[in-house]
Image 1 (cartoon, rainbow, N blue to C red):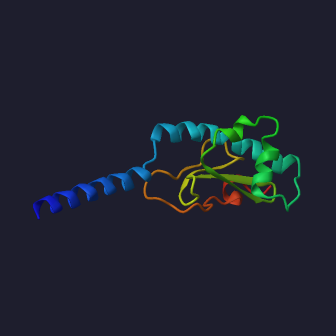
Image 2: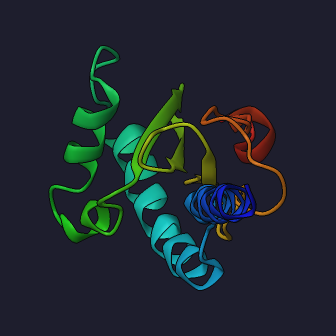
Image 3: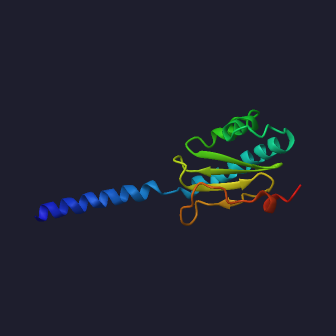
Length: 139
């Protein structure tokens, strides 16, 4: 009986440690990714604003078009889900975990500094939270 109890406690401890490490986000990595995201978001903003891509262009195609001149901008986010929101002549880039379930970073290309470190605090869904009209203005 005691042997079974010890085994159950050991297995449960192992499972809990595995589950908690899956949700762990490395803060140093996120700060590095945040810096890279400001550059990617600026490239997407420039593409949306000045190259007038067709409205039916999908998120991944827009990312490819925006980084054609410097593919490393997008390669920095291998292993993450990267999304793009277009609103008239502005854009927002959202970086989520690989499964696409939790938002990590979000930046509007029109603003200089990184807009939202969403990996801090409780997990949030991989959905846009920035409003381009508020962050970028109405132009």
